[in-house]
Length: 242
Image (cartoon, rainbow, N blue to C red; front, side, top):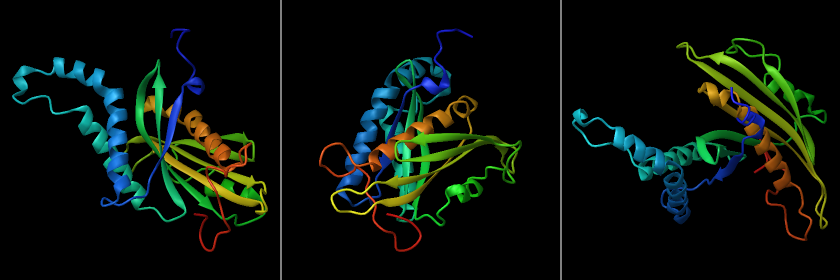
């Protein structure tokens, strides 16, 4: 392998939240157009090459466009986000190789939960640190440190009932948001779940989700100026922290 290839942990990622909006909301179409613009930028060159290579004997015109890819990705992500409870959100990521988006969109379900116990070690069981039934081999456990709390990542190879291989990545962290401007400190447990089926993505998904974990922690922490944190929490009433 070439020594010039970047290590998986060094590949840049882009992470965004998927809004919870309905088709009749103004933000629905605005966010869809945002996704269309991104995927036009990321896929136009590759689709142009594929269009040139499309066999004439196929009998039909090349069936894909950047607009179609972007709208399809947006629709799928918006539908998934709309199915989640109030304390959960969908984040989606894109991994870049030599400046080009190589994998996108990579969805991650993020839950913000009220801690069930003072000791966060109970999260190890929730993320299946010792393995779950679908795991084909024992999982790999890694630890993550953020400015306002620590976390864990559990990666394992598994197989679907049909025999398809996939990578399971379940992560969790306890964040302790310090008090500010008279507001009390708030603790929240954050769970991140994703499954990937492509071999290349399995090799770097842990590093990508760790970047997302750091981004969430940074967005929860009070900024250095007088403004509010980008992600704010209040005391939960039931189930989680919206």
